[in-house]
Image 1: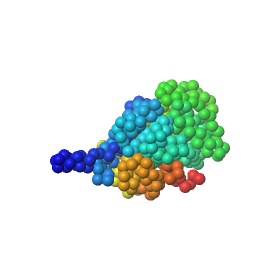
Image 2: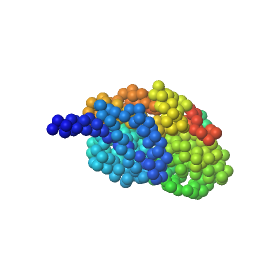
Image 3: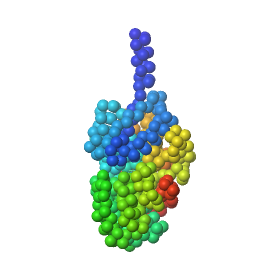
Image 4: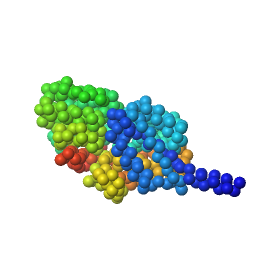
Length: 367
Ligand code: PHE
């Protein structure tokens, strides 16, 4: 009996606390999933226990799709018994998964989904990134004030909540400054953009603004250049993966995009330590999404520590009360009502086939 009791108590001591990671590991935006996973793995290596128990990260692939995101989070919660979820990466998938998190009362923290609807009206869904009204405004400010652009064509991926929202926020601020806009549409997975590009050229665009994800941004840039377009190419955070350069090559040289972070512009002590540890582990500089994945994991663990319990509802409350958390991407204070932090925007460019820091736009300057 003693042996059995000892065995059981040691088992429960070693029973792992499970955190889910709901990521697009295959499909259209698989590069994003891979980058976030790298950040989570590093964070898990650095901090693998909480409340005296081991943490196990359970990865779940969404295939970059909404339905799979919803199914995946249900599986994580019901079958795997995770007490919190990191994810999803892109807004449309986080909106779908967030509905389930809310119903099942398990906290979900998106590293990177920037559409307002991801957390709107929810108690269990939060994020460690800024939101698109801020990002779209920042990009428009940069376009008008720094690049002096007056005429732009905005390419909107109508299949992505992120792209539809970001386009609107950009256009709103751009027009406020008297800018002229032509908006054209495409869909995730499109390969051919000549119809939209000929409209953009006929319009006399000084800039082409693609608010979708890296694959299509790279293709639009290539096809624009081969049609003789000499103006600026702009994008949002959806451009921020090394695949943009792998696919786009010279055509993406000089593009500007809004983003969350760059390793060459560390904002906290944690930024520096994170970047060094990342280079040591992976042999390359960290991408934004790796830093955001790292922050989402660390913030959840911090919340578990503060809640002093593995009860999902109490962890959700702890997440919503986090203030001045030192992340790799900045200082994160989660607004208890909205689940959103307020963070600065950076503008990055592609220089010599590498992403480079171009400018910082403070959230407080964008009001
Ligand atoms: N903000 C994008 C979305 O909401 C996701 C993203 C963030 C992609 C950061 C790359 C880098 O869909």
